[in-house]
Amino acid sequence: MVGLRALIAQDGTVQAMATHSPLSAKLAEEAGFEALWASGFELSALYGLPDVSLITMTQHLEMVRAIAGATLLPIIADIDTGFGNAVNVVHATTEYERAGAAAVVIEDKTFPKVTSLVVDGRQELVRIEEFCGKIEAASAARTSNEFLVIARTEALIASLGQAEAHKRARAYTEAGADMILVHSRQKTPDEIETFITGWDGAVPLALVPTTYPQMTVERIKGTDKVGLVIWGNHAIRAAVSAMQATFAQIRADGGIQNVNAAIVPVTEIFRLQDMDGMKETERRFLR
Ligand code: SPV
Ligand code: MG
Image (cartoon, rainbow, N blue to C red):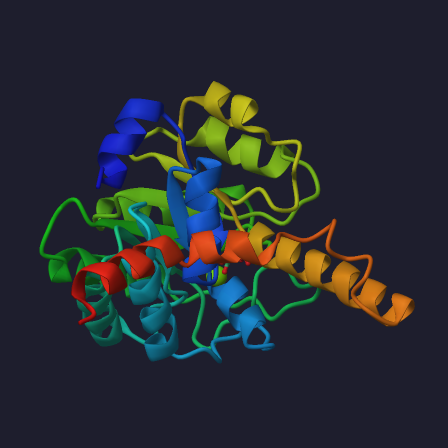
């Protein structure tokens, strides 16, 4: 498996697709994405829950472990606020590195957090010193420098302005962050592009352009400062669209006679389950 650092050095900007399961991770790998985003939002949605620190570390970690067993792509684990203070961050970092993740992203919000994109969400940030302690804790807890500690600032999400966002990003870099994820929920890239222009490039940036889709890979690469772009929630949204359309058609038609053309055949699921591998195992070992 190629590490994230090496991938960024090779490609400039790595594209990570959101995942909530081993199956969605396999599909992202087959589509050609270079990394996976083990999204807290997607896993929360999978459980039918809002992304407000209700999913436990154990639930998320189990999913990361299952995803790591199903693909070779580096997994960027979204560990929200780190499940508590710096002590919790040490424990989480150890567990996620052991589980096979390639990086953790820790955000500077208070615990319990509120998801970033919701209108009128309660967006409260911890003190800079406190968060620097968490970043130092994660860096100290990892066993390999190939395991990245990514600090995420929510200063723009909390409407604290560019100066505060830059101040936090600089402090987190000095605390040892390998990369800064800066999030925005503006409908255009202006806010993020202003941040990028003012960034000294001490470490690469990571973006999640969900609300500003004008920010294409080409435009991102043009900045020369972004090492990672995360397509943040497109696996779960695509899954919901497909299920809603199929379920509605079956209800409308009073049967399944018209849906086969729009959904994959069962043989495609067998392929994704590696049924051929199972048959081969049977052939060799069942006596
Ligand atoms: C997630 O996917 O869980 C994220 C990205 O953290 S966002 O939901 O946009 O905050
Ligand atoms: Mg998240």
